Image (cartoon, rainbow over all chains, first blue to last red; front, side):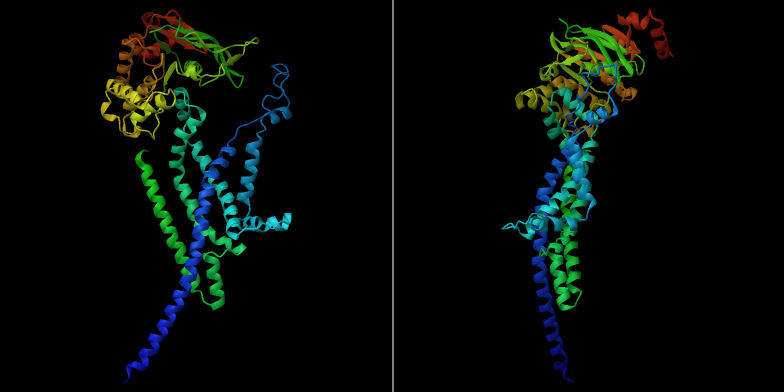
Amino acid sequence: MDWGNIVQPLVYLWAQYLIYLVNILQQLLVGLWAAVQLFALTLVFSLPLGLLVALGRMSSWAPLRGLGKKRSSGENAPGKMVLALQRFKPVQLIVKFFISILRGTPLMLQLMVVYFGPYYLFHVSLSGYSRLLAAVIAFSINYAAYFAEIYRSGIQSIPQGQYEAAQVLGYSRSQTFIKIILPQMAKRVLPAVTNEVITLVKDTSLAFVIAYQELFTIAKQISAAQTTVVPLFVAGLFYFIFNSIVAWIMERIEKRMNYYS
Amino acid sequence: MKVMELNNVRKSFNGELDVLKDISIGVEQGEVVAIIGPSGSGKSTLLRCATLLTEMDGGGLSYSGEKAAWNDESGKTVYARDLKKIRSYFGLVFQNFNLFPHYTVLKNLTDAPVSVAGRSKADAEVTARELLDKMGLSDKADCYPCQLSGGQQQRVAIARALAMKPEILFFDEPTSALDPELTGEILKVIRQLAQEKMTMVIVTHEMAFARDVADRVIFMDGGVIVEQGDPKEVIGSPREERTRQFLSRFAN
């Protein structure tokens, strides 16, 4: 029996398959890099922006607080309307409204609004307005809304006694927030933030709606062109590895913060 | 001049419950005042008014003659615009310690002196280590509060308040969160401070301690001072029926 006749075509087939795989991998790696960029830029902007939003959400600024207080001191109590106006907190209200929009509508839709909005709504085409930029803007704003609510829960879980101790010692309000509250909040919210960050890794795939050439967009394109599911599975594997690294890093940070309880 | 003076303090919550009804207290240099009374009598609220944690509805407050709050024409309290200097006059020890959990013991003692009072780091550290030594905690400087017992935490809290070098130190039920064994070590520290002529106002349920350490005992109930004077008289042979009634629960 001539083994060469059997083995040679097999080796040839294998080699062809490997080239095919490497080709897919190459294209997917480009997509992965695009996803990583979107992921990293979103975190860079949304984590601090979330803090700003959280502060706005907790704003107790009520410009009409003093309304009708001078006139009706004691005798005739202010009416319901006046009471409502006294409690009117514009910053908190606006921020609350935007958070509810951002959390209450699909991120996919928000992506489309941010990318196509400038043209279709205002008929302006911005030069240099790339798909990546639009995706980063949409993701950052959306994730900031979620981070804001996480931060708020963290800040509100700090016992009142911490504020009081700081106040008696003479810390200013900003010192109290930066030195006393913020570090304790960071530790408390870390598990919830990790959750969001892991979700973000997978959410980057939503950028396909504006044809941003990220991992999932490319996987779908190859899959459609070559009628095979292999690229999709490989993409899945990439997301999984990406997330494993993210989870590992977050675990390290959590451990580092465990020096006190 | 009185170290601290509260004049005609009125405080009600939600405009309904009168917690403090026209209370006046002055504390002399080096004096130790114990405030006793049942729960809800307004002791803690009075302390919170004195330490600017709660706003008074009416009445005045001053430290060493410097006005922190006074009455306007209509008898409502107006506060001074800048209270930072006023806050440097007093320290407060909380029932629940309220140490900063993310700071080491040493940092708990040095951070405010450095970042609030503007002392040098080296200077603050020397003071902090002296205080820890005095509290018997010199080996705990690098620990975190969570690594300490309740009694040790409260001693750190006392040291933290003293590190700011206040003129007067307030204690809000400093032993109420501690078991009897740990209570002793806190009372010992306060006793030592009394011997050093530290001006103190202590809200407490430790009657024997109040009798031994205080120069004056104030018995409060229902938002008023029912009786005050020499501790041996107020606690030993009270004039008022209400005081007698309250103290009889401690005798048993």
